[in-house]
Image 1 (cartoon, one colour):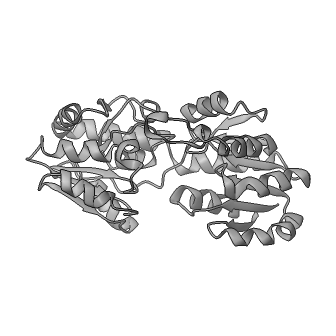
Image 2 (image 1 turned 120 degrees about the vertical axis):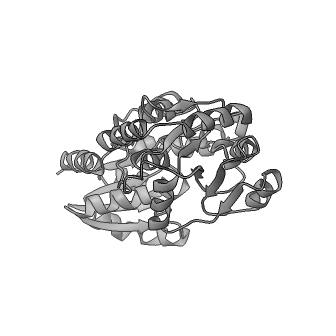
Image 3 (image 1 turned 60 degrees about the horizontal axis):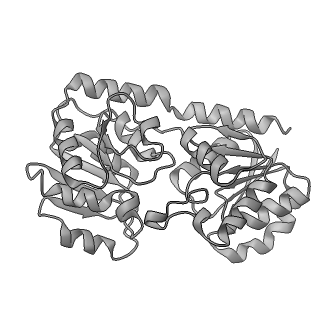
Length: 322
C-alpha cells in the first residue's frame, strides 16, 4: 500500500509512526513545515492509496479534504493542541474563532481518528464532535536503559522552552520550586524557542540549570541519573517524556491535569500545578523512593507502553483499508 504521510514537524513520536508504516508499506513523507510544498499534493495524492495525517491544523487541511474528495481513506492523529480549548492559558485551536472550523473540517474529512489517550479521545469527542470513529492507540516508547538503584539528587523536566509552556508544561512552577529544595539540582532540558529561558533563569535560584535540546543518548543518561521527573502541567494529551523517564526508574511527580493520571501509574506523586510548595513537597517525597519503588515504576511503564503495541495497532488499522 502507498501511504501519503503528512506532518509539519518530525517529532520523535511522528518519526516512530512513519518508520512503523514504512516497515510494511511504501511511505511518501510530506513535510509541510515548508508550506510551499503543498503544490506537490495533487500528484502525490494521485499515487497514494491512503492518507495518514499527524495533527488537525492548517498544514493538514488540503491533504485531508482533497484526499477524501479523491476517495482515499484518511487517518488523522488528533487530540493535542488541535482539539484543546484551555482559556486560562489561551491554549488550543478549539478556542480560536476560525481555526476551530479548520479542525472540524479535517476531522469531518477523516475516515478514522487516532487519539493517543482516553483523555485525548474525550477531548476530541467533547470539543469537535466528529462523526468518524475514534481509535485510542497509546504512544509506544523506545525505552532508555534502566537507571542505577542509587540516584543523584537530580530533578528533571523536559519540554520546549517557550512562553506557552511556562504554564502548560509547568516550567515556571518547576523553577520556583527549586528554591524550596536547595539540596537538589533542578534541570530543564528542551529546545529554547524564545526569551522564556532568560525569564526562568531570572526567577530561579542557583540550583536551577536550563539546557537546550540534547542528543537522545544524553537525554537517556539524564533519565538514568535523575531521581525525580516533574510534569506539573496544565494540559497533557499524553506525556511521552513522563513515560520515558518512568521506564528509567524516575519517580513521576505530576499534576492531575490531562492524561497524566491515566499514564503515570500507581506510584505517581500528584501535586498542585499552581503551587511551588506543593511541587516541592512532591519532589521531596520522590527523593525518598526506594530501589524497589523505582523498579516497580520502570516495570509499569515498560509493560504498558512498549513501541511494539503501537506498531501492531497502527499496522492492523491500516490493513483494514487494503
